[in-house]
Image (cartoon, rainbow, N blue to C red; front, side, top):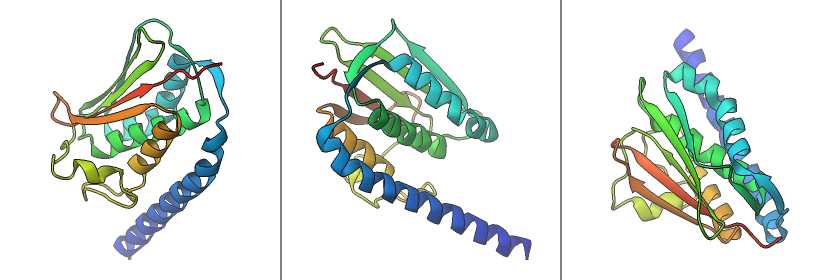
Length: 185
């Protein structure tokens, strides 16, 4: 009975995450056409999102490490960037093995853009599947995800005229690199 109940709870959690991500996509698509641009400090936004996911990281025994250069102030859509970062961090936590770390690095570039990377020690990506990772509902099968997280990040990045690059990291996992363009004020 407990096993059946556990299975049911897991299924409900997965359905709730799927519904939440579908709602996020539905809300974002039209809104991003006319972005809510603001000037804000990206360092603070990253720290806040990492703090929000700390309980999950502790539960999984994964260390969240933040490395940043000088304060990084950009003019962009903080809500959209928050959603993108939440998805990247959640993916990293889903794939990171226990007793590993997730490194988040942030640097301001000379052109005013920000370089933000999220690196885990998970299984990495198969180069043959790399292009499919941005497809809606595509999943490598190593997680409980619905296959929408990277599709959401990709949609946000394109709408913000920025870029996203995925590569296998030195830790053996995935490194997601965002170049966030600072839009004209």
